[in-house]
Length: 205
Image (cartoon, rainbow, N blue to C red):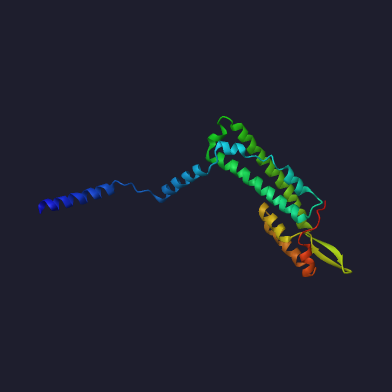
């Protein structure tokens, strides 16, 4: 009986001792570990970054600049191009911030040059995109003669114009959105006429 009690006591003692050796990890430490693992996992490798470029914007930019196309379509092209450039630039910057050694490895100059080109392309397209967006916000409606009457119609699709403002996120975003909302209230076309004009008018310079 004494031997059984001793064995049970010893087993309990060993269990307590083993559990006492486990180091408790704080929530902050656990978050840091998870963040580090995620950062390493998500960072593109050198080979992936070497394939990333912003040199393929000529065709898209040409379409966005084409004054013979509908203004809604042009604005969509600017939105898509700018968003794509911004994403590629962020990929370069995030990778280099998380892994600074990328800037100093063999062949890294190609990556650095590609990143700098993306930064410049993004900035240039933004200026052009924002200039066009502000032109449309300044004059969002036009007047036309329909059925012998002068009516005010939308120059382009207002939802696309709002999307452009949200994409650019200028400091006066709220004011610009308010101007679009006010212009929308002034539309004097009938529902049928509005439906026919949502594609936007041809671009003008």
